[in-house]
Length: 193
Image (cartoon, rainbow, N blue to C red; front, side, top):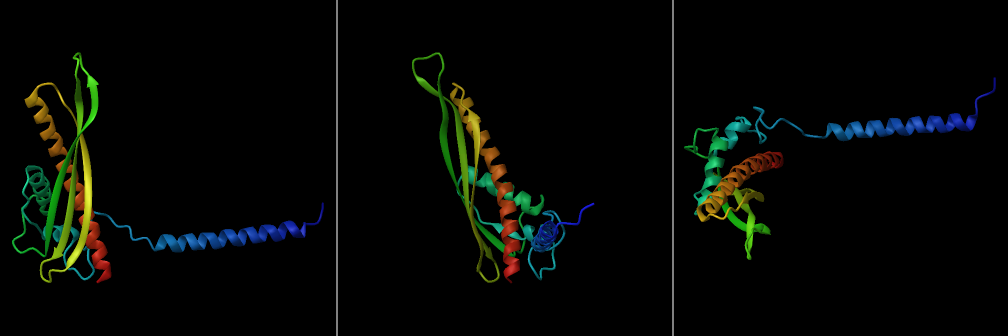
C-alpha cells in the first residue's frame, strides 16, 4: 500500500468544490425562472382578481378593413372569449392591422411553352397595439407573421379558391400566435406594475 498523493487529493478537493459551487449557481438560476401553464386560472397581471382566460376575454378588437384581416379578427374574438363573443365592457382594446403578401413559390414548366407558377405562398403579417381602456396607455406593441403555402392549378377559380383557403389557414394560425403573444405581453405588463 502506498500513501495518498497530496497533490491528487488537493486537485480532487478543488474539483469537488467547483462542482458544488456550479450546482448551487445553477439552482439559483433555475429558481428565478417564471414558467407557468398558459391555460392556468392564475391571473396574468399582478393584483388582478380574474384568471388568464377572463383577462383575455376582456379585450375588445377594433374593426379591420380587409377580408383576411376580418378572418384574423374573428378568430381572435373566438379565441379570447372562448366562443362567447366580444366583451360588453372591455378592459383593453386592440388595434389590429393585417397585411398580405402573395408570392409564387415555384415555377415549373407544365407541358406548355410558358412557365406557369404551380405553387404560391400567402404571408399574413399583423401589427397590433394593446391599450388599457381606462387610461388609454399602451400596454403592448407587437408584430407577428405567418406563411401558408398553396397549389395553383391551371383553372382560374380553383387557383383563386386555393389562395382563399391558404389565407384562411394563415388567419387561424396568426390568431393563435397573436393570442399567445398578447397573453405574454399582459403577463410582462403585470410584472412592471
